[in-house]
Length: 238
Image (cartoon, rainbow, N blue to C red):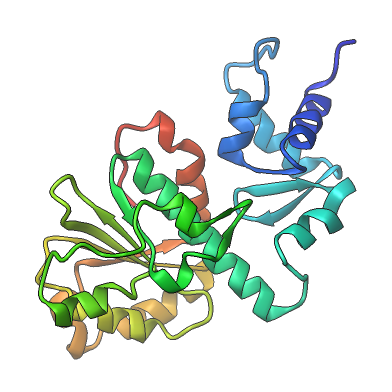
């Protein structure tokens, strides 16, 4: 029996437990018979336009027929701010960890987050480390240990620091970056696009002048987009 493209996507999601990131969908859908040069874009269009799917977060889709089962698996309760914040924070940490690993970095999440759920795995199972190597003095290591995601280079030195800010105060993350400014590394605040103005207001004060040009804002949608395409990219700039 010949299935439509939509039916093939539905079946692929069923085999994957009813949910998948776009990257995962592009791996598990058989594009062999699809007469299109851009099957990934077709998958994106299908899930966005069909009522058979619903979006959990940017880049993460599930089947409507198993909505309750999937949300229960993630301990995600719609309308419950605490569960939504917990899920979102771990989800974007997980995406950043996987992007870093795709790019050849060793990745870190703090010990307090290692048991947080990223899809069907714990963050500690996805990341390489949840204990930092002693790459600097203890007072700076204490600051670095609390950063949400760190990418390390081949010399086991930090290359990029990421803080995921769902609802917490962005100033706290900027203060961490200020203390870590002597490392040859880049700093990123990952948050919803609606917080960009808040980010700009808090960054552009005299206290943070030394790091003002080194800290970048990355919206959630861009993280999800990079995660979906990073395997096909040799490099990228946020």
